[in-house]
Image 1: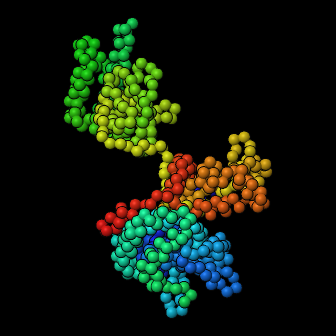
Image 2: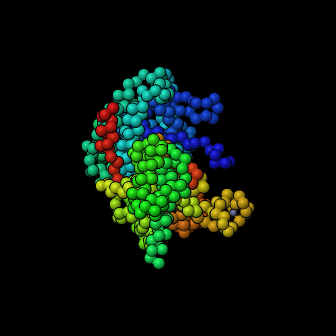
Length: 228
Length: 319
Ligand SMILES: [Zn+2]
């Protein structure tokens, strides 16, 4: 019960959809049954929790007997898939009530599942979903670009065990994530200050901006569709 | 009268010099302040040498004894420290600080007294009339070489003295307030947040769990507002406690309104649910003192301004 025994909370990693969807390898760092499961990010970091902000473009109840909501959340690089059912009552009710398109932030856990054809798809099981404004979304893009760049910078450093793990498990060049971060930042600059004008509660203004961004990205179609 | 005062001033002055010199050589020679004072006094009283010259002469003779050059000693050899790192009495240090405030000296022996500040925090300083130093000005930044730390009842200050070098710098310092500042997205609000009840016993403010205080058992609790939140910047997590005022500011829900909400719903958890909806997933910057693993929020700012994309872009392109 002492506060000293409280295990340290897992950091919510910042990762763009493109990189997140490239991840597939999961691991534990202890034999304990309840030990946290980590998703290995291709830029060399472990993620037990993520924080993302993007545009909810679609939601659908894909459950059969019970409600099971799927949301598509778009960032400048691609699409996150978010699933919430009866064990995530707050997130499920948030998705039920939300009217896309809307800027949302999600705190959640990465989940992987193997498809029939042997591919591993990755999605987010939300702990919370909140409606946010355009400034929060922009802030997240900058922050996520920064964290991504920092991971790439550390990637080859001696002693970076997750960098080493990524080379072994993925063998993906980190350049593409740098390119994605740069183009995400550029998309903000192109949008200029216009989109900030309608930041508070002006859903229509937010929506038109985000639509044009998602159209500009072909990563959407490249994302694995869960339950395909 | 006049001469007596002057004489005693010179004596304490000599004593100060003696202590400083002894301290300067403490790593090199086994000398004590009494011996140094005796030598100084001899020169000043017997040979009518001005104090400064006496000091020079004594220091030179010790330098000879120790086989040292003047610049290996004292000035410049100190550690440059941040004010918040000062935690020992009688240390000779250098600081770079802004004069935050000047106070009215309460005694003729004090030439200036006030507050210095650097990025790490603030600290009282004193300079004495006998040290004959140039005055420092409020709002300006100085590099102060060879100041000595002082402790009184657990509070630290720095004393300027005759050996202190004062160099005005053409820069500004954002003065810290001994508080940490953390920022990030609010990713969670922990249990024990929202409308809570505290133990009403004198001096006990424990939060009740099911109407029970850990110390005093079942009591009639008093309502309060609090948020225990988690700020996460993608690199580290910080646990933050927002007290009643901060919680009211942040959520726009007053204690009275929270009680009404709870009464209408016959449930106190509606309050924290509402707060979650309002706060989670947004970015905040919080400043305040640290208590254990918590930062106690004195100041909270919702981060609404756009972040600096350009800086990250430059960095991204450089790797
Ligand atoms: Zn009590």
